[in-house]
Length: 340
Ligand SMILES: [Zn+2]
Image 1 (cartoon, rainbow, N blue to C red):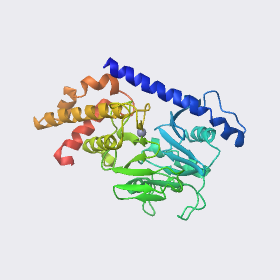
Image 2 (image 1 turned 45 degrees about the vertical axis):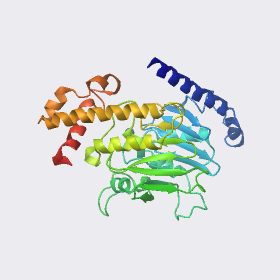
Image 3 (image 1 turned 90 degrees about the vertical axis):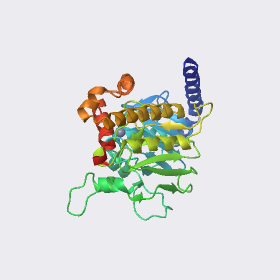
Image 4 (image 1 turned 30 degrees about the vertical axis):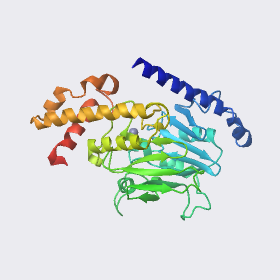
């Protein structure tokens, strides 16, 4: 284990070094564009208000501290975001994005309809614009998501929608995947993979095939157990299938470490080893709960048996928006036949 940790430390150090050297090219953009010099260390580990900016690849950054993690792809024609954080943090996110590029936000991809991932859509979409040659008519950035995200954010005529219309996706997909053309996405091959009934019924894994980065949304995070929104169609089986999908398409650098960079819904930047550990943990907990259900135990009895006990030190919580009890209840309910 210590060898593995040492390798992890080395690989993370390599990322840090890579980021610092890549940073040397950043001031060009500032000189041409904003006349606003980057703060020392901007582009990696820098903060804009409470938003933290981490360089993942030369053109890919991860913003954290604004709700769910945000992935930023910068290219000649504009900026693409995966998720937009909370509504309250949107101005700080916009500020951080402007520090990375003087180009407008032209695309937003949402990994689910959860408010800490779509909350900034309205503000950030309003600040951006569509690439003029983009074939789809309309104004403002393309906002792309699975169609169930659109269903959850909008409402039938005459009903109150969950989100303002400006925040809704204007391009959706309903199959198991969608490819975005490289032409209007900086030459990047971006594939949207639907993870059915996972965190919710509208989850998308966003795979940057050329940059070798995957943004997972809330099926994977380093700060808690996966958030299974049962009321929005989430299930523990779907989460595990989604984690396995990430492991299928990710590639390691050495053993299971390094290589594809994986941006979780919340928490720090990860690689395959992190996802593998998490997948194993969630699979073990599912098996334990399934076993207790087979023995006829009630939800209260399952909670009392503490099937997550050995992982609680790292992922558990007794307070806050997603407690261990809520996770165990979600696992229990989605494994109980009556709720399937
Ligand atoms: Zn989230």
